[in-house]
Image (cartoon, rainbow, N blue to C red):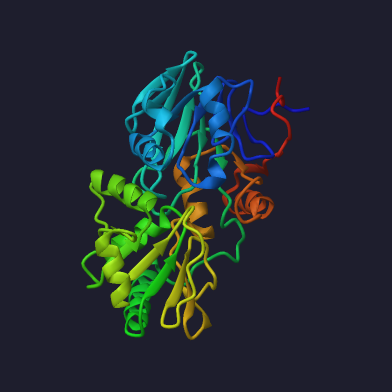
Length: 343
């Protein structure tokens, strides 16, 4: 079996060289990179804490500490790396570069002693300020299909979201459901633009506090069980946020619901209407198909492995399109199972 310097395993662990794994666990790898905190990139993180040195951005470290991992405060095997700084890992150099996907999200580069540069995009948006330059690249394939092209800008999506929010607030309270990162992006859009309290769980309030600590312009969130939160709920003039671990929004007679998705629903319209009180809005922090190809060009990669273990299932088509359009060698990841692959 061909052993490549890069690949992705069945559970999503991204392999760079002989000693580094990203966003997953591999028993034979001494070092793990955590590119960001979305659940589909956190597989076996608790296991990694006991076996590997873990490298991440300072902001990702802070978000993890705010969520649940009190032991992160005292662990000696978790390292926050400044953006662009080199860190030695068994004679190779590890470099983390921001990807723009969410607070703390990074691309990873492993520069070997021979000078070969192996990279992993992580999840990313396009355009971005600083695409890594590598020889071999593992590429996110969330929007890998040629049909996955937005015919609206993300600025358009934000404007439409605010128009919808103002309209539904006239009818009563609004429940907004979104994944991590997307919920904070919505708070950035809402900052200074609505005049009702925004309520959330204690965990979400802590997470928003981290965003504020790192200078993000996000609207303040009030703990929904605090006296101020209870008063807002009694007034029926509020926005309630639901994110990871917050459960399902209650069904209230006057409430409207908006689900924010990182995935596009329709190519030409960010709004999806489920009923007269329920909507979906595509606020995506992922590059679409065209942006993904532009990213590959910017990396100057000579060989690309598309991530076939997570995302929208477009890895095979994306590899084909990279070869046809960019004339760059590409293949979908092998998705080998079992942590002993490569030994």
